[in-house]
Image (cartoon, rainbow, N blue to C red):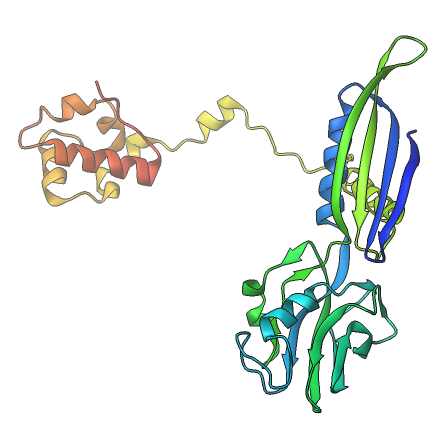
Length: 311
């Protein structure tokens, strides 16, 4: 059993939670193995909720400007990327925003369902400088890792602009290995794991989730009595199953007329007779050139997986 200790915990901001964990004792060499596995799982396999698309009233593309809005559409999309949600979604949902200006638009103005919550309601979106309304719709979904805009266009509803989505709750993960000796002078290792999350989940909870994923993954690798084994073919049995080439006519090679006639004139009528010759010996036949020899070799390999000796 490992001893896992949280030696440091810090809330830098609402969307930045940081903790350092010590995992010990580990056998020599296990520190890097466990550290790499946990780091990759924390950054790749933990799911989160993010905005993947937005529809803004009277906006057709991301290079537009909006009348009465301080930011252009590109800046708004970058601000939407920073919004962090906590919770679980079984299927994509559409959230709405209807803001009457002038004023500052924040994440608090988004109307969301009870399934998810905002980690930082004060997250800035845009400033409306005119006395007018601004309507937006947001497509939210559950995912892992990150997703670039170019890969989601085909999946978005008509009129929605793509948003780079960062789903992963763990934003940064580092690990270090320390060595020590126990009371019996056996060299052991300690793993120091630094985890920073976006505030949607605490570092200890995201570490527990990663451990569960790894446990399930490696648990499925256990062999059972019902494992499918590839049957071993005995060498003698394999030889017995080979076709009798002495009974296969050379017509089955489907050669050109020139190559076929040359073989017939040399009294070669079956594959068995053909395989007794080398490539150099075939070239000694009358009117049998290199092109014909290559044709015969290619047909043998393609149709019967056979090769003729070069000499």
